[in-house]
Image 1: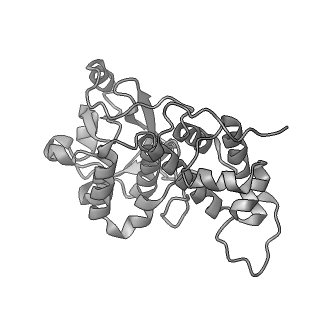
Image 2: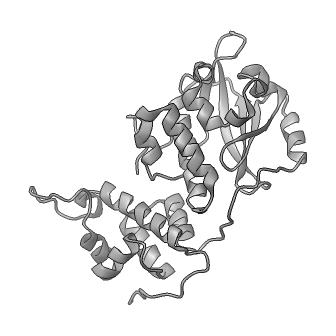
Image 3: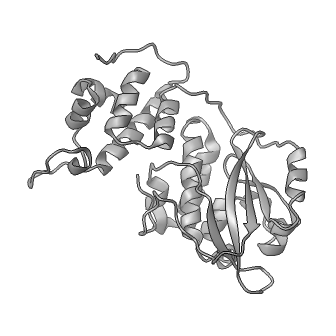
Amino acid sequence: MAITETAEPPESATAPLRQRLGGFLRAYREFLSPSDVGLPHTPRRRTKGLRREEVAALSGVSVAWYTWIEQGRVDTSRQVLDSVARALRLDEAAHRHALALAGFAPASEGWDTSYDPNLRAVLDGWPDSPALLLGPALDVLAWNSAYATLWPDPADVPEDRRNLLLLLVGDARHQRALPGWEPVAIDLYRHLRTRADRRPKDEDFRRLTERLRSARPELDAWWACRSIGDFASRTVDVVPADGTPPRAYGMTLLLAPQPQDAAILVMTPTRTEPTDQPSPDAPGSGAPRP
């Protein structure tokens, strides 16, 4: 079957989105090795990852067209993008993200920081399960009393610093409360990138990334990484703020209807042995895979 390279530009396939799509695909291309896709590896190979012509051949498109996609110069058909996704071995989340960047999924501009007051009642309905309502940029919008008892109380944090990711990577009290904070932070950042890449004109994500770089410049590989994905539920060991022994909680991120891309982070007490395992895509080195 012939693959149609040209396409009517999707409404949301703006130049900034095309650039992000190109960078996203390039990161995955450079991460793959020839053996990953059944190609022989030559000893004098200089290219990091796959060559563009190899991806083009595997996708069934011309080298020039695939090059233009990576360079953000063209809109392309969904058929081509599906084929490229298969060639690059994109998982479901990465495939959806690539389609969104190409304009084949709805995307709105800007974060809505308001939230449905009924969501506060949802949080308060969990007296034994610490919970946070998080905005699209992971700002802490609301919390329940169980959270303030277990963790450092967000009320004691200046409002402009009430961001879960910023607190996890830059606040000693939060790191003491969650000794295994790194895999959680990695997954939260991947979750955030999944949403933020679809809003290239939004400044909140850029400002947050700048603050993260300022707080932990040695983790710049995290902030520069193009890895995306949904947050993986896990069991974590939390050290209560009152100094009592650590407790095990199941940590889950639930998507909330308002504001768009907001979420509820809920921690359910568990009697299982406490562990803190990273998501399957998070490497042991501490840096997320591209």
